[in-house]
Length: 298
Image (cartoon, rainbow, N blue to C red; front, side):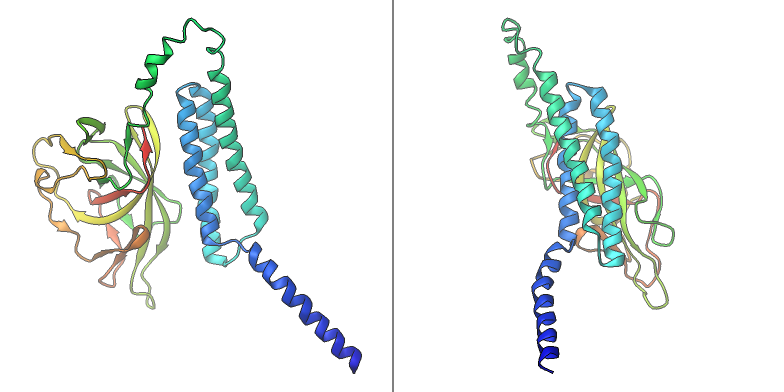
């Protein structure tokens, strides 16, 4: 009897000691979000490399696009299964870091050849002010109004679906046009809940991960803050001046806006919900107000 008691006590002690360790290794939503943040950082590294070695940057960007899809897959899997193998997480994490390392190292290698020649140095020096592209950036907090190029519906949309929208007017900051009207913004569906008999509220979570104009694509992080009904832009849209961190769209310059879309509710994190017990339907041409969540270097 004493032996059985000791054995049980020992087993309970081992379980108590191993439980915290297991909890520590559990992958959480915060861990997956950290992976997503690393993808954005890697995209910046690749974007900087593009000025020196566009071919190499294109290769790394292709690899990074695949990694971005894998991060979305891990997020969805974690939400559905409530668990994620650490080996899957660390594999994607190390591959993202590998892209960052290669982007930075390749950039350093291609930057070294001009160094040995002291005479041409004065030529690159004037370029530095021009290379203050860090000043040419879309500030965090800027709002852009974009028009959907296709229909978004909770009845048909799938997680990881891509869609496109176009900016309505020029984004002008400090007298400079940073983003022209008609720039293409790419969106991603990260979660969908269609309406059912038991779940009367259809929901869909979307975000925006890149913007393209002038033949170049820039990574971005954008969240939907409002859905508007639009009847189109009447006449020519003039240029709109905006200060840093202020949305470039001024309602008075856009003809035909009806205001907030009826039956639509926008929640945190870009979640769009239907309020009338129907499927969530955003018709082609609907206008979404998108907040830029982190600076976008151009």
